[in-house]
Length: 248
Length: 303
Image (cartoon, rainbow over all chains, first blue to last red; front, side, top):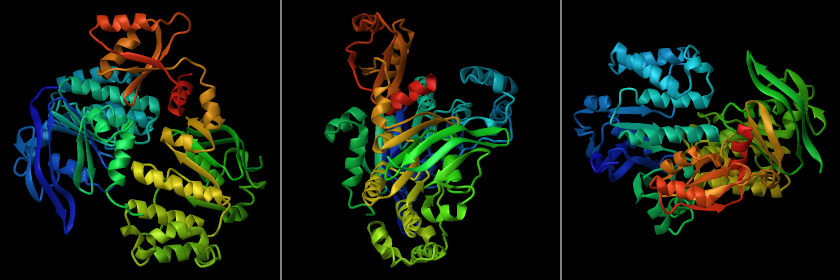
């Protein structure tokens, strides 16, 4: 991880009607950092990710991603990022290889590059014998690993992963995180959301969003000390509970 | 222990996908029984068979000694089923939904109000709001109220906590313990291993089979391997070095630590530590620990 800043968010506000989804949030993310974005449902995580990915315009505030201002360079940003959404985004009725080929084409890779990448990643994912299988027939964990791979096919500066391991078995979940570590070691910034608190321990920086505001941000070690907690689960419960009586 | 549910050699396939393979276990009366496993393990299929929504290809399922396939009408009165997807009517109000579910079971909200009071009191002030406009947490409370309103004996909850944050998950468990105190039996499924420990008994499921059925304590007691927790400030590098060491059988990430199982016999931590130091990894700590359910699940998957 270097000191170079790849995401700069300053007083970001996003409103939908009179509902404030993001309320003056500010943070920075460094190159090659694993940045965990946590918060209860409805805290505004997906909204913020969509803004960072150039899919939604902010109401006010300044957001810079990979050196581009999201307000007027959302198209340039899309070339610099990978995005794996909560909902599965590969084509179930295309094969593993066809999906790689298709997305490689969309990202503007040459045929030769696509061939090289396909060979490399099929070996990496241990999918050589499954290259002609329909993606819809693969177990969920394999599909998620493939979707992640495809989201970094064009070697983006930043990859956004929105709950990538939801419902995945414990072994595949760990393999997925090892892929995240490898990706970050190649200086690709990983911006990830999860509901598994043990996974937040794997992040270098964790940002906890509650009701559209940043409740706390820092390294898991520091947050645990600050909130006198055994693990991140306890930190999370303390921060979220303390907000009010919740809906109960 | 009195059984309320019996699964006997149940098989179910969808096309060429086998969803369940020779499933047999019992659920005791008044316990919280958890089906623990990832997506695709067969948890929902097992629940839907009990809820009389699927017919097994082979085998039988009994609820209070009633064959669920033959006596499906009687069985439906005895169960409250909450599917994984929100399945109330989004364009009916909170109150209309609840009235609807009460009336199809020939009862009223008033008749069973005591039962749902704890839950319903949280959402009653929104009684005229459409169900589709409630937040996730409130939708869940309404769905649970609707599943309870006809006073069933068994509650079947299919992944009520998936995609739900840690605080709301905690609240649901508090409600389930209350229902247990009132005499209910609960069958719940979850992909979160840490929820297993909250159940009285669990089935660990993978690929349509159960790898173990027991109390969480018993499953942990049967782990039978020397488990160590490794502390390191560089988890990923330490993990890779441990895996390359010839005294290490298995090493995997576990929250803020690494869990490591040495090969049988001549394990010497000092020796492993020295070789880590040779790779520039210092002040790595190792201590023997008790496994939890996730360790057991990983071990059973790799067996």
